[in-house]
Amino acid sequence: MYEKLQQIIDESKKIVFFGGAGVSTESGIPDFRSVDGLYNQKYDVPPEIILSHTYFMKNTEKFYNFYRDKMLFLDAKPNDAHLKLTELEKSGKLSAVVTQNIDGLHQAAGTKNVLELHGSVLRNYCMKCGKFYGVESILNSTGVPKCECGGTIKPDVVLYEEGLDADTIEKTVEEISTADTMIIAGTSLTVYPAAGMIRYFRGKNLVLINRDETQADKIANLVIHDKVGKVLKEIKVK
Image 1 (spheres, rainbow, N blue to C red):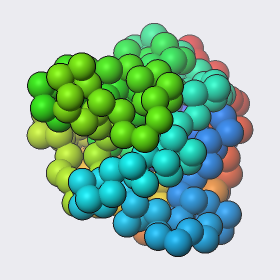
Image 2 (tube, helix red, strand yellow):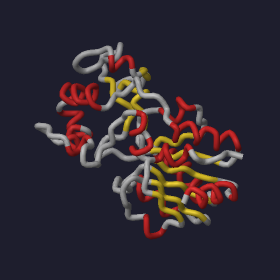
Image 3 (cartoon, one colour):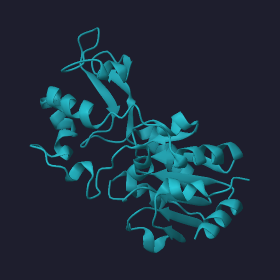
Image 4 (cartoon, rainbow, N blue to C red):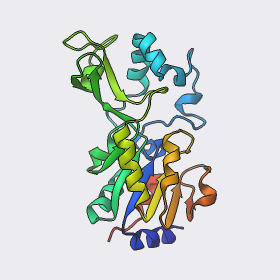
């Protein structure tokens, strides 16, 4: 399987990488939907509800108590998957990383063209005046973080009930539809509309790397059920 992956990458001219939570688990960031993931832990209110637009607006302080405790992993470092993708981009093989993750680790590894479908915890903005704040403003505050103007600061992440950024969607569709190889990794492909983006792929090779089976296994040219970093580490970039 590794030999076939190496061959596919060697022969590719434009690769797009589409990644989910499983790309960052090897950096110590827990995923959401596995057996021991965030969504299977017991809370008074389910995480899917807490991370919704409605809950944020109605219970902002409770949202932030959960968000600071469970969504910020600022000590996490890029792993072998992030680093290999940066190598592939520098070599000219990789044209874009499309990620469902909000941790900023692809950029920390040095990858330039990162399309963040669900935003980033590293960016925050005032809902009243639009001023941007770094993640430290959230981490070093208590209760509801406020802007100098008195407005509420909101993380620049896509909550449930919110739409994806139109510009990011447009760029993602363009990258996927013009790639000859697409590597889908570390995602269960159950979160829409993000998971639906793969239908725009018209290229030659669809590669799927994930610990568990996904709905796209049956249409992929190559399926590897293993950790993403472990697999990509073996790739030689030429």
